[in-house]
Image (tube, rainbow, N blue to C red; front, side, top):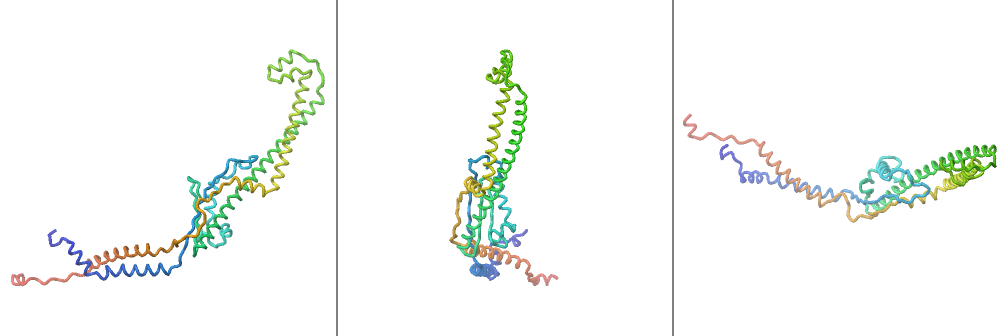
Length: 310
């Protein structure tokens, strides 16, 4: 390639100079349009709430055992954003237009975001979604606690039935067992060697004594099971008390409370105007070079000496 075909900085400058109106005019137009549009566009304010979720280690009668995981419940609330259930609780047709929720499982943080046309509206909506999220978690934990209570009650009734059947069998054996017998040192030593209680082994009638002790043990077990069933039954009739216990166990720490933002999150006139100016300048320069490249070049007439030779 000859030196005449090389592009110099002067050539680039001349191209930009010939298309100066385009290079300067396009950014100016985009800046003005963006600035006017940003100022006229309805403002949107955003308020974000950050919540730390955890469960206390204290439990009562296994009430908080085998509950749904807190991470699963939080993610379940995030997935409810596009459901009618959450829409009814938040009082909007489409919750995704004004609300967003995200759960960070590694840190155990729930991020709740609310938008509004004014700062006050954004703050109110942030407070509303926080209350809805807290109620959702407490309600599901309450249902899990009630299910645990019912399962514990059912198991206690099964244990009570088994203990009552065992007591009936022992009482039937006691009716036919002799209440007196001659103590035998050999039998007593053998029973002690097999791990029986020494007092029972040395009794005048070890079999009768052992059955009597088993009867007492079963009677005590039945009394304890009956008392436990009564307590669980009464507790199940008090959902407010269970709910209070769940509320105390569920630790919802609001790290960033709902607040009214100082500035709108959208639009941002200054940022948008700068971006429009840079983009317009870039497009103007590219357009200038493309227009210069596709412009037809003038046909040069042959030199006079060349004509004389011909």
